Length: 149
Image (cartoon, rainbow, N blue to C red):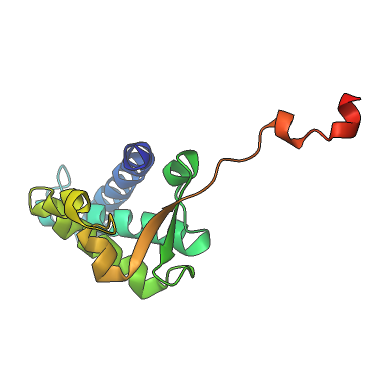
């Protein structure tokens, strides 16, 4: 579910980046006097922009706090196998591994069902894992017994 939440956040950013690239293509065509088609970008450029946007989106969140906004909502945190925050290399490897996991018909994601450590392929590739954080204490739990008397 956290990935679904984050998808709703990253899609508009991808659309914005593609729109900026389209505008840049049109501006460059005007400057050079060319007749480049400004109604569409090359499909490979759109795919590259999308992949770059997703990688930067997740990596920045993971490097800052180990959590994207979707992960915060579901109390999930990314840490290295030794419990430390993930490195830049680990974040990039995790993004690459997640793409490979999905490209193999999702087998890399389904792997956690048979893995004794409940890890995905990209966990092993990046030496990181997801941890479920404890629930925050409720207001009732935070009240002191002296206030109840």
